[in-house]
Length: 401
Image 1 (cartoon, rainbow, N blue to C red):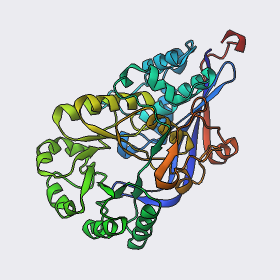
Image 2: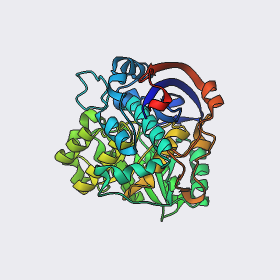
Image 3: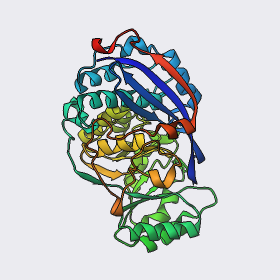
């Protein structure tokens, strides 16, 4: 069994609402979707979201990386099992620029390619993607099979009226954790958090995400007035360029510090541990370069005694929602779980299945082969801006696979 070709799609999907945080305002997502077609006709799917303010990528640079990388040379291998697919994906390297010292430029397209291969091979082997953790060495210390998982909520709006409505709905639907975006220009975070805390109640686990809005110089003064709201973590309080300064500030900050934009690769994780800049990692499958790298980063945090959450990126469709579900139902010790916002965020989820969580944020494990979802090709066609084909093993017949 071999890969016949990869097809990469530039998809442009409108969001159901404007999403605003300190780093960016977004109403549309430009994403990479990859279809992996095996010689026997089996297909797998992957997705990645290039974000210039996270890993330096744009949708254009993502496709340029695909064109510049020797895909056929690296991927023309026998794929008889999930283990062999892991080996191929582990060896797969994009032709990254030399200036990429963090080893994360191109992570979104790497994620899309890797997921498509793992999905295809797991489908052909008739096992769910979550089975990957049972045969992937780095997952040994964090494996945990679960029949269901519980997602947390998020409040992104700075409008007092929308904050009240969202807070009421979060409490009504029984969520146990909520994240609030802070640091948005012109918004009084203390007033917002007082309002939200009053509405969600004293038992709600409440954390904040500054999206690099603050600085090492003003972090203590910015967080000081918010401490009384029992904040359980501060996500990416300062820009990546200042992240080293967090090592000295951590003892003075009452809440644990989580890295997000500064945590995009295994290399980033190792540096964070060595320099003592954080207490938690925010792992997002696309920005971290795929399912396998995300498992490695979780294992790294576990070994260092740090916590981690599985996050998501604004605009993920059902493909990444499914990948996140498989991760969450096969990896233990996830402090916070985000994702599966399909019905609430994207106008085209690209999957026939609706993976949106239910009451209390609960969602079941996916048990079908591969990602366990089917692609709505009519929806894919509606949002496709461009597509490119990359031949891998074009001359092999199905009976040679």
